[in-house]
Length: 187
Image 1 (cartoon, rainbow, N blue to C red):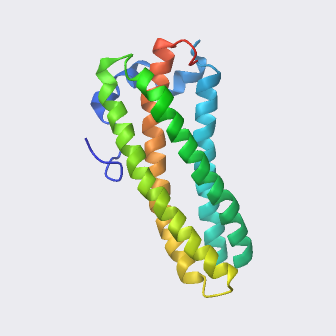
Image 2: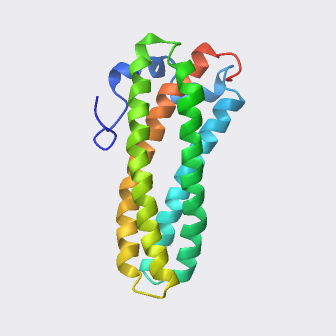
């Protein structure tokens, strides 16, 4: 299977339940419950945090926002993003995915794909943290912050793209499983 950075969509063989439960019909399903809403809301939060970080960095680089304001926002929202992503992936890996993978053998390989994504994202989170800390250090010492901010922005573009790909593929795999099988304690 394609790795996260090369993948354009969830592989066709793993879309069997998505064909049966297309996105546009999810919220009308009787099994569209609190867990699915919560999970999709978490994914939207990650997307919004990434977009906000990208926007703030671009505004600082174009002179619309002071570097210290960027530093405060990256410190606050970057920390939130990293902590929440780690927690989210941990609960998926330990609690949800082991149970869900047993429900439909046709998509079992999808959980291996998502696990590989989580490992790839761990490296991206580490790079994000390193780049953010370099920029924050430059801002806090009133040093040359533009070059580290530009490096942070470039890394953020890649990270945002790959995280969005993962989140979309995860949604396309998991939500239909939950809608079809409505496992006890999960919907």
